[in-house]
Image 1 (tube, rainbow over the protein chains, first blue to last red):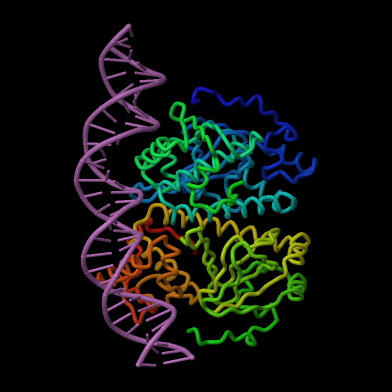
Image 2: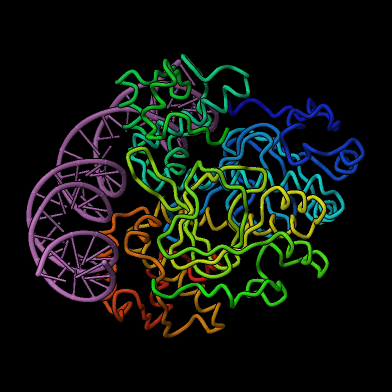
Amino acid sequence: MTRVKPKLQTIGHDCTACPIRHRAVCARCEADELQVLENIKYYRSFEAGQTVVWAGDNMDFVASVVTGIATLSQTMEDGRRQMVGLLLPSDFAGRPGRSTSAYDVTAATNLVMCCFRRKPFEELMLSTPHIAQRLLEMTLDELDAAREWMLLLGRKTAREKIASLLCIIARRDASLQLSQTHGELRFDLPLTREAMSEYLGLTLETVSRQMSSLRKQGLIMTEGKRHIIIPDFDQLLEETGDDSDGGFLV
Amino acid sequence: MTRVKPKLQTIGHDCTACPIRHRAVCARCEADELQVLENIKYYRSFEAGQTVVWAGDNMDFVASVVTGIATLSQTMEDGRRQMVGLLLPSDFAGRPGRSTSAYDVTAATNLVMCCFRRKPFEELMLSTPHIAQRLLEMTLDELDAAREWMLLLGRKTAREKIASLLCIIARRDASLQLSQTHGELRFDLPLTREAMSEYLGLTLETVSRQMSSLRKQGLIMTEGKRHIIIPDFDQLLEETGDDSDGGFLV
DNA sequence: CGAAGAGTTGAAATCGCTCAACGGTCGTGG
DNA sequence: CCACGACCGTTGAGCGATTTCAACTCTTCG
């Protein structure tokens, strides 16, 4: 996976052909608004494991994830780390009106971001309500996701945490591929055991043990370390502790 | 405290005299915009312990907290509860574009809210960018606060959690009273031990024990169950695990 | 007075953490 | 070509922080 070079050339500068066109912060823009964005945007790519910005460092751009996955995390003085956000394609990074990053932003996989310098973007927000509207909507969604995650961190058992994470990633993956979230699902885990543990507020050993436990009980199967097969999605869902419908991070 | 009746009559319908005028969602509104808001707003008050809305229930208004404290919480099927937000005066409840509440909203103390019916408010948001702008700013702040809380829930010890909560409330209180956050601070805890435990992802017994432990070590003193005295704020701050500056929820 | 609510404290159980050893894969350099 | 280290992941044993269950105090309220 790490050997695949991001194919920048395949992502043209033509916003209308952009894979995240209809979900990103620019989703509601009209043709003319898009044109303005197109003039100030630029792409940056990162290899898996690379740091995009460190918490506290200057961040003079905001950006949309085009392909790949980025993580937001916080570190305590003594090194304890907690992931506080997972940025998937179309998600937004950075905060208009703030010049430094509040979190470490890291490429979990190879990553391509569509960046806008902060100042022009902020000015654009004032003149283009469609951008601000979409950003508000996305921020409210992220707040809901963060609150869902607070429930997981504060109240779920290790087993429930793992099951929840697998279900969320499986769902996201299924929705990208337009497949149903029932019966058998397969996907590649984009996170290392360590990244999972940072997200779930566990140690990596506990993550490993719970993964083994779910595997031994037939709730999941694995091919290699990273490819996951969920034979029965609804059965795994019952291990999350959520009420059956709970459709978060959809 | 529960016997004090909210003095609705003392809160006039005049927005310009509103105590949260400069911090709430209406903060950036001009006089004419305020006039429109004034026409669609209405006050509601709740007694400590009362539920404002249940998760999943219809919520046909959005609102600002005027006085008192409200909590947002989620409940799992088996009854485990996690608080996911603490709404202080000027904070905003409800989500434009959504008709049901995602969380249980409860009055932690006596509470007065300034409500707007959802439909008119949504229309107003489209025509009044000042409202949408302020709401975006507030939502981004809440997202930061939620992420700070994720670090607490995922990585802090019980002792650090308690110290963090006390510091946050003390800070908020000091900022309301325009006093310094150094040396001795005094304030009333607006939360029961149970509410604290729901916020911190602990059991109420653990909260009680850790409070006793901090008291025995002289980091805090108490008058009655709810009045807290922090003899040396910086000393308590060291127990939170945060790096010395960390100014969250400011 | 009795009951209900809030809070404290103790003893035992348990879940997840810490420390440690080990296996597999991959890339590098002698 | 193989040895080596780096990285990722698994598993075991023991420990400890927090939970669970339970008893008890104090205050308030009808």
